[in-house]
Amino acid sequence: MSWSDALTKALPLLHVLEGRGNEAVFVGGSVRDTLLGKKLKDVDIATSATPEEVIAAFPHTIPTGLQHGTVTVVHDGETYEITTFRTESAYEQFRRPSEVQFVTSLEADLLRRDFTINSMAMRADGTIVDPFRGLTDLRRGVLRCVGDADARLQEDALRIVRAVRFAAAYKLRIAHGTWRAILRHRELLKHIAMERIGLELDKMVGGSGPQQAAALLAVSELLAYTKEPLPEPLAVAAAKYREDKQSSIRSRLRARQTEEHSSPVQQAAIRALIELAQPEDRWAALCIALQFTEEQGEELFAALKYATARNAQLAAVIGLHRKLTSSCDSLSREQLSDQWVRLIVGKFGIAAARGWLRIMRAIPALLPPSLLQLKLDSQSSQQATAGVELLAELELRMDKLPAVRLKDLAVRGSDVQDLQKGRQAGPWLGQTMNELLLATALGEVPNEKEPLLNYAAHLFAIGSVANEESL
Image 1 (cartoon, rainbow, N blue to C red):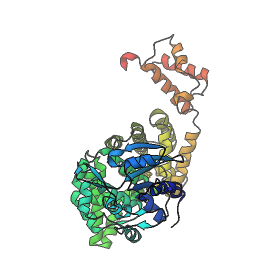
Image 2: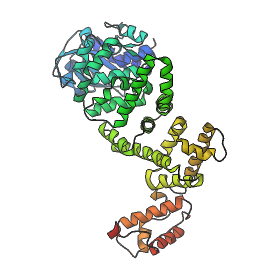
Image 3: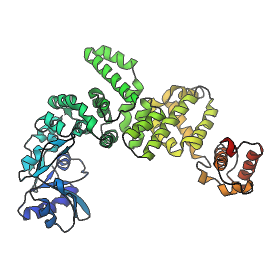
Image 4: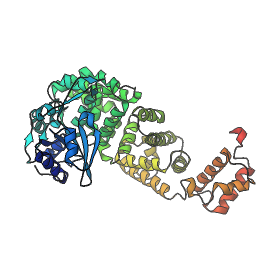
């Protein structure tokens, strides 16, 4: 085991507390990840010192959670949470302890934690304190609750979802007793705020084991028990996965037949999520694979309390995909190229287009067969080659667009308004500007001031722009 720079940098804090006669150790994820040789995200410290003693020991502190014994210490430009050893009483709403009691026993503090792999401590000399055999579980690839699994999960029901996240991220098998407790107590998730569920799911989708997380969520049916209902495609996909899983147990041959007959696109997409670097792309790919509509994508992110901007971007990528898919059967290859421009400029935006291209390159199985057929009919004879060529053509068309946003146009709204002799701005003006943008993007009008104003005048002359009364 080698010490990371993060632990080395935090080591003086342990020395300061020990120099005042207190016990101080690194705890939790920093110990687990050090033993695994992983990069540390943060470093947490536990100590026998009371919060008041911690504040007295360091010149720069923030009383972030005194009622729970936590003080944030600022040291050498970094912040560290230092928490007093504690035990916890009965939990309220299956989430938070009603009160905590400070203790001087490190083992008593470790006993209150969730899983054995997170219940190890490390002293300043590198000695590992591991009363619940977390290191053994880590080496054997097992995720196990500390002590009584029923008690740990009832204390904090969020641990039910965290168990899935840790198992997926660290490629662990959930111990039988812990798994049975998860199934027994999954209804307690109705007490957990959706923001907390959303945070855990975000970490799963963006983490190192999204495929394993999806499988565990499907088998356990956890997402059927959240405080707010989630969109139907999630339940449908989970039910199908369980059906295939049960078939594979009954017969290996039958399992192969079932998997081939069921949803290979969904299976391929979920396996390939790891190929996408950005969590937003992974979410969009997952929703596309599960055949979400735009509205269901918005419903999902709204339920998980994600930011409005994320919600809109997810819906845009899903919408772009569905519109392209529905266009394939009725458009020629050349018409599809223009449709691509119309969808980018007129509705979904350049960010959605770039996201869609990244997803399709990473997960070609998501490309609609009818879209590929447009390419196959022309030059290519192989589907894989057709997909690469088609995506390259669409990206090239997008990159050559002279304007994709209103700010890219060579005219301003005030210029167009002057054509109407100072007519008061209203919906007509926005509609006109959008018409100019689309005409420019399609190459019908050069992105120059005079041609654009001439085109605007033409639109007014033929009555293409609606007046306020009709809007």
